[in-house]
Amino acid sequence: SAVISQKPSRDICQRGTSLTIQCQVDSQVTMMFWYRQQPGQSLTLIATANQGSEATYESGFVIDKFPISRPNLTFSTLTVSNMSPEDSSIYLCSVDFGQGIYEQYFGPGTRLTVT
Amino acid sequence: AQSVTQLDSQVPVFEEAPVELRCNYSSSVSVYLFWYVQYPNQGLQLLLKYLSGSTLVKGINGFEAEFNKSQTSFHLRKPSVHISDTAEYFCAVSGWGATNKLIFGTGTLLAVQP
Image 1 (cartoon, rainbow over the protein chains, first blue to last red):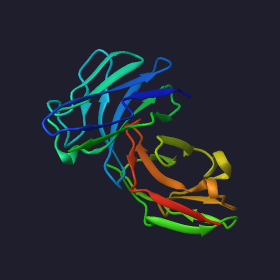
Image 2: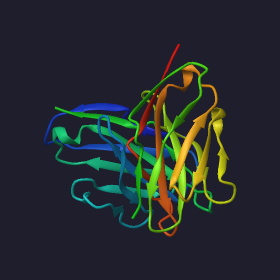
Image 3: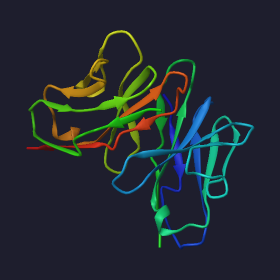
């Protein structure tokens, strides 16, 4: 298993600004992911954070809006840029150790409200 | 591509009663299947997973699920629920060859009443 922390846990931001969310894992992991959970809805994968290379984005998500960094095997950041009220969501990071285990462990989430 | 359907957005049930949360999936390739639980204001926790082998999978907190390939279903069951089981339950699928990429259903709120 893994202990995953996210900062901040919640924030209220004004439209047009940007917020960077941090995800820290207590051990090295193969894969890290970022999800969005809009109010009352399910989780949608934003991107896979690749260590040492550019993130892989899912359809409907672009790097200019959601730049991602992964400088090492235990840490990643997601930035929500030029925010609008539609970006109000819970943002969760998850990790997968690979090696055929197929289990993703999720962080507690960052609750973002854009006014 | 894969998709997941959870037909019930909310399931009310009395404490100590049995419960079944339904999940159907669609995929053109073989799949791995998962159930996650999300307690209020918390992240997701893995309840159980099906990768291969026995179609009846047992998970944490007394939950189990049965993989039915012919009906493309993976329903979650518990013989006797507790108040503490009140939470949102998500079914998820990932396809062989696209492993680690989870597609989630819309979730089912299990509301256990005393």
